[in-house]
Image (cartoon, rainbow over all chains, first blue to last red; front, side, top):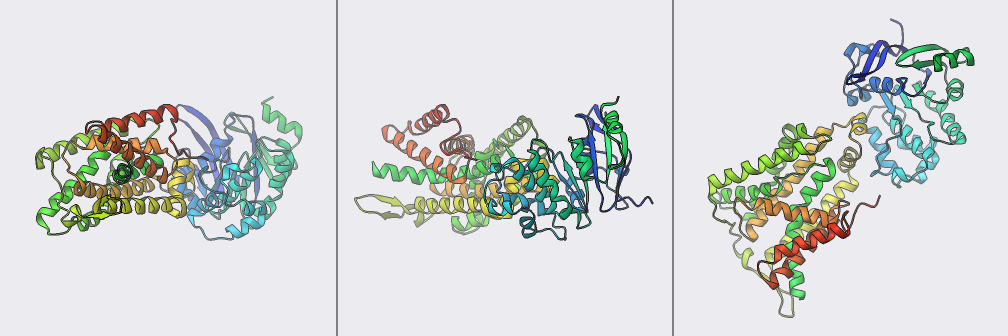
Length: 234
Length: 285
């Protein structure tokens, strides 16, 4: 075996007649933070949705912990240990901050993450735990969205555009929490619009272009020229 | 005037019991159950049928019907209505409309078109003197208490329990709720199950308080619907107050002319729709 925790080979996916992914080869090792970058419509979000069961794919298309999990229902995938922070946060508006976090823990996987642990990581959320989640600032809402995913005690955390629409200082604050998250041995995939942020925080990097992997490599070895060529497709 | 008001509140509290289930089902899955009123009538006839073979008090029958009502609702949602849900509200309305016709005609075949009622014994005729020459029926007062208790229990369930949290989560965003591991089809089934248990109880109380006939359903649906809209979709207490307002207005109308009560109710319903389309107590957040 390749030893990868998550692996896809030639992953193909789409919505009805609109194909979005044309053969993605991807690997994520245990404890790794991998970034996926690419322009709008490159298939980044679709890829995360394919991993978490929100987009249908064949059973063999996604391998996780030596098991084929492609096309399983989202609930079964989260119980196996893949949790997603969805694009646009998608918090439950009629639930309070704490209720949102508790929903994340619905899968009841055992592990280190609990409400107390999350409030230690993001203290501001404890003060606001009784407020409706959507009354918080954008950055705080993003903390709730990340916390909600962590509450399921995942092996793999998939973050879709967590910096979108946030001020740089808030983005820094959120990414500063990442070491505390990966310290538990968790693997993280971030989909990121901001190339410099992606390059700074990740170990390896994939650049998607029109549903294909245009570039993959070590984040600190790849040059700006290589990345921008892959990003814009020359 | 005070007596009218009180009688209206008592009448409205029965409407509240009809409306709670409708409010719950619409709130959780945006499903309008067109057969809602027919389910109430079905509950009443189930009790009438049981009363012919068992010497139980109608209230005991009402309690005994809670569990079958729950099971009926669960199965109906899980195996029939879940398949009709989607972005388009039409399939579920067509299916429940069909159910409505089936129930009405089945009851007509089995029980004829004659109005029937459940004999509540002394409870049906007793009254409580509350001074100033006003006497209120014991049964309507009991219905008011049951209605308040059911509203409070449902609101508490919705606001404070894990199941209530799940109801709100699937209502907000089904896809994300499923991403957290919830099985929305089971959550929906539980919502309809609770609604149908309430409907069974409401049907029995309706049968005790007045009469039922197989064709009553659509009108009861309309009362429940009006109560929900007047109150606003925000909370069960909103639905409860909406039902009381409908009851009071109908009662006032009845005083002018026995034919005017229901018509007055419709007028107030339309007025609320025009002035405050989101109801009197809409969800604030």
